[in-house]
Structure formats: C-alpha cells, structure tokens
Image (tube, one colour):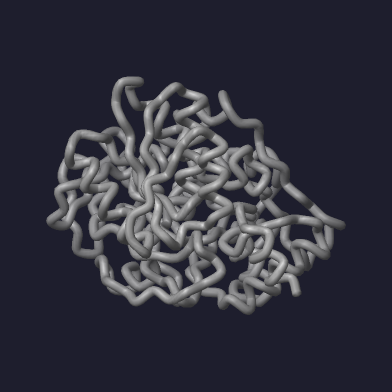
Length: 346
C-alpha cells in the first residue's frame, strides 16, 4: 500500500491528537460512538514506560548473525520470560492499577501470558479470557504462572466481547492493543534499539491489533532516521484496511499459522490512527512466506519463533519492503506448540 502521508506531531502537554480520518477527539480521547474511549499515548508515556519496564526486564538481545548486510538483525523478544514482547505492555499497564482493582483481558495467548506474569510480579488480580482457537502452548504457560484462563467462544473476537462484558460489571479492561499504557510499554523495544543499533535503521514489525506497531511508531516519531514497516498476515488485515479507509472497517479473517496476528479490532481503537501517522509502509505476508521464515530462523540463526513472531523476518526475506539503513526484524514471540512447529519445518 502507499506510504501514509506525514502528519504533524501533536503537542504532548495534553495528548490532543485529532485523527484526520473521521474520528472525533475530545480532551485527548479518540472515539466513534464507543462507550470505551481510549487516550492517545504520547512520548511522555513512552518515557515513563521505559523506567517501569527496565525495573523488571533486562534488554532483549540483538542477534547480528554473521553480520551479513543482506540479512536482518533480529530483536529477540522471543527471549522474554513469557516468550513474547507483550509482557512489556502488561507490566507497564498493570503498574498503574491499584492492588484491589480486578483486571480482565482478552487474549489470543501472549497478552494473557504477559498479564499473568505481571499479576504475579506486581501482586495484582487478573482474569484472562481466551477462545477455543487460543494456542494450547500459551494456555498451558498461563496456568504455570498461576492464572487459569476462562474459555469463551470460538474466535478471539468472541473472547474480547466477553471480557468487555465482564469489564462493564466493574473490572478494568486492559486491551492487548487499544490501551495507551500497553502501547507505550511495547514502544520500550525502541529505547533498547537506540542503544543497540548505530545509525539509520528500518524496523520490521508484526501487526495484529497494532499495539506493537503503535509503540514502535511512537518511538520512531522521535527518530528521523528510523523507518517502520508494519507486517500483517495476508488473511488478517483489519488494521491496514481501516487505515486505507480512514475509519474502522470490518474485514473477513481467515485461518493462519500466525495466530497472534489473527482477528478483528475494536471500532474505537487508537491503533488505526497511530499506524496511519507513524508507520511508513504496510505489507502482508502469506503462510508460505512465514513458514520459510520459520525454517530460515531455525537453520540459519538457531532461533525458535511462532508464526506471528516470524512475520517481520518473512517480509525481509520476501523483499516486501526495501530497507533504508540497517534492517531490524522484531522476532515477537516463540510460543508455539511443538507438533505445530515441527510441521512447519518439515
């Protein structure tokens, strides 16, 4: 798709950032007709998140391989204690929650894992709602962290609707993507890249609901020598379709081995605007391209990844967007059941 036109950076003092694609903005909140307006994250939120996340997590490694200029550097979020980047946003968001406030989340797996980990570390209460499609490996890992997921419905959208219903009864809903503290937490990856990569870079970032891309884009908005390429599954394009339309649109979602990228998005999600403003290019990858990336990661770099985690690498290997400066692919997670992983490598 064409590169989104640049938009002036909003003032940070009050978070005002009117979306130019048909949304209303009120005192820093973006809303359609939603009962759950969400504040736009700012660079001040990102600065605070860096402090919070550094208090709990060491920087993840940057794998340089053999320093071949034709191969991407790998930002190994797969080596987080939960096996995925989403622990960053979970820790940052839940650090703002009072100990007596119950939290409810919907998750395809990795967000629930991050919240379960944060709940244990911070002494918080959390309910994780998953669907029948949730990865068994991720569900088992949640249980090991002391959180028993609640299974509702067939798809992530079913789980999200149930979690929002629970929140309407008094719990605090923490979205895996449509939350300013979650977005800022994911953006702390960029703060680490500041210290790991010299000079211009192009960051390839998986997109499901857009929380990671929004956080990376927020960081990149302070770095004129950084480009960000958002990578979706070609059968789950809710974010790019909405960016093209200039407003939320419903799209049909197909089956993919990248379960972390599959599903729809909330009507009022701020990630549509964040991606439109801060992501330089949006591309898609197929399941075959993701499988090729999984094999490349395993055989060339000795890295285990799940389907969503390999999407950025898949885009680089398939030549979906030409990098400027150093190419950095975020390997966003490794949580995949062993039989499924073995089948992709065959």
